[in-house]
Length: 197
Image (cartoon, rainbow, N blue to C red; front, side, top):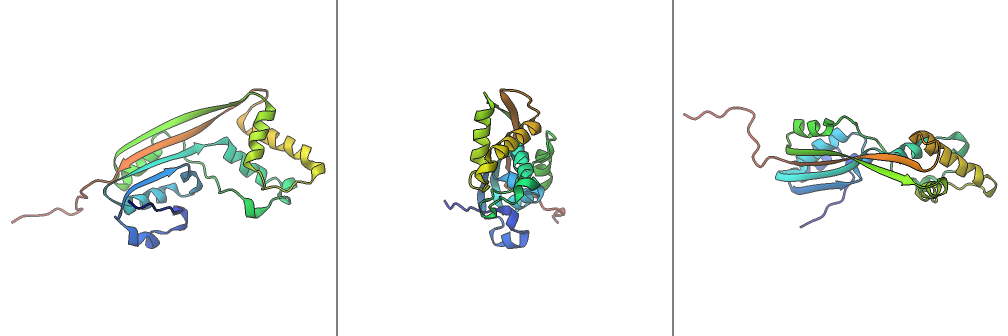
């Protein structure tokens, strides 16, 4: 058994050619949301798998924390305080249509495709608990001067509550996730008919 760890976004199909058809299983847990072109990534997974190999993907289709992070990073009044060496990976939300990724996997050639959308409700009983969670996410990324700390924290919380549409406590929101499982066929049928004489 050999474990390979890679970031698919960086690789083009040509660079993956040496691994074509050589991998038994691909598992991605909460990494796929970092890939912008998920359709190409699914194609690449298919080409990497051996016949009979399978893929299991779990990723967020919609996570308000990702949208919040992008919004905070783009706020002009705080952008001068960002330590770019500490940035977290990008967040690319997925398409929310129920069977979109199932259909993509089937169109690539996968069989036995199973798809399940999950809703993960999260509740913070008050603003302080929510703010502490948000501060942990961006810990070390911003170098805010002490005299602007209160203003910064207010902006963090207000921005997040606006994104999730929360006006009061408790702070409630839902993350939408997707579980995908698929198998590459054991035998790939030829595209052209075979004639026997």
